[in-house]
Amino acid sequence: MSDRGLFISFEGIDGAGKSTHVQALADAFRTAGRHVTLTREPGGTPLAEKLRALVLNDPMDPLCEALLMFAARRDHLRQVIEPALARGDVVLCDRFTDATFAYQGHGRGFDLQVLRQLEAWVQAQPGDATRCRQPDLTVWFDLAPEVAAARLAGARLPDRFESQPASFFARVAQGYASRLAEQPARFVRVPADQPVTAVWRDVRQAFTQRGWLPDEVPHG
Image 1 (cartoon, rainbow, N blue to C red):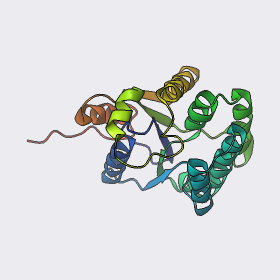
Image 2: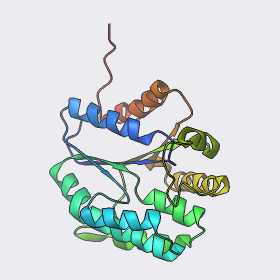
Image 3: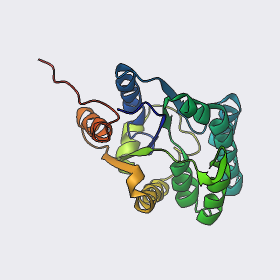
């Protein structure tokens, strides 16, 4: 097992079950002796959390939305993600740039080439502007929008994204599938309509296969 910094992102629409497994994975890495930084996007810093509140609640056009997402991401990278990776932490991030391509690009229909240019600028790695910071692994919890909606029904007042129609989330799912097709080595797709134990088995296996976590020892 390597002690280098690891950057892991988790993607999927609300209701896909990301949060449960992010916490379980954090516990698994800590048990293995790693220091873990848990964070989220948009958010993760005081400035980015303020921008998150604007994006989730205030009316705006797709360009403004995309710019705020990348502004929050820039601060998040500089203040949290890059320092944690430099320390050798395992960074577990609930959503990253794939969500911007899925939600703003495919969901809203915003220009994907503009998003790619913003991605290159904002995620340029320290000391090498030609390299774009990407997660070492992205776990995509793939769930049909109607199943996610049923899980969330009555759970809380929906925000500007959660209140979108099913057709919007169908486009979001296609956006995630497109990112996976472009960068298959970086993605693990986990069917999120399975029982929780089966989803966790698939998630854990993705990390043991890469040598980032030890195999689980059976109980009994």
